Image (cartoon, rainbow, N blue to C red; front, side, top):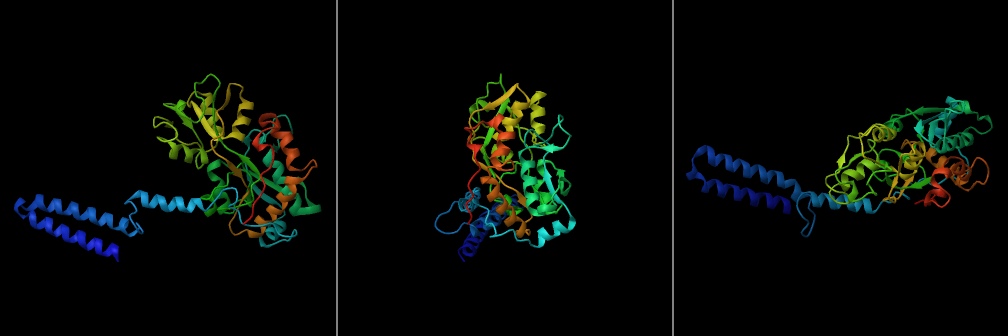
Length: 353
């Protein structure tokens, strides 16, 4: 009702202005009135969304609503599908078994995570690939074989569409859990913790995610957390003069731009950046991580039974001391680049709602 009375009060003001302008002569007066009327009409939706007691007009009122929602959501605990008490099947899992194989979206260019090893048989290998096979072994049991896993290489910006369109059963591809993404996909409990960092040539004057990025060209992948943070932090946490380059489809493309001199720095997950630094001895991580993030397995929001099953598998995978467990995979793939004292050296502990 307040919004309605505000509107009519403004409308009366417009009429008073129109009366006062009669002496101006037709066209000019009418133009002014039209502008004022349009302004009041545009302000009406803002008054309706202001809420009570003196909220500011415009974007601040909207931003407050967004922040309030974000405050209730934490990336480390946003998953809400507790593991089932047993390896019970469901509609999604039964369909996978009937099909005869598990379809998983992965990376093929992330060194030590999901990549084609030229020194082996040419199969995809890495930390994420180990997790995929651990999931498949549990689902198929004694009938498991490598042929029951179909790995589909997908670019960074196609991870969510691939899950939504059911082109894959899941994505295991260094995918950060975010509250915003849970609107589109369901996540498992986190299986890895990392943070955003800056990667730049060793000879660069860049020291981290700070003022040393001024006037520098920075690369990030499309739909990535890095790109979102860069745009939000520009002019605040980092200088307004930072040149945020057009995002690339694949995160590794940023390393290529860096090597070609088309970018001065890359912002990406520190775990990925460490692997890229291992590939190219001319680059290094600059500064400490400036976020805390968690990787999760992304699945379709309708696949509740699969989400719960993956969470149950992760319970065993994290704590296993055998050759097929989390720590064995970390030692094999990530210890050489991240080290034993890294915050990433142990799996995150899940906290279910």
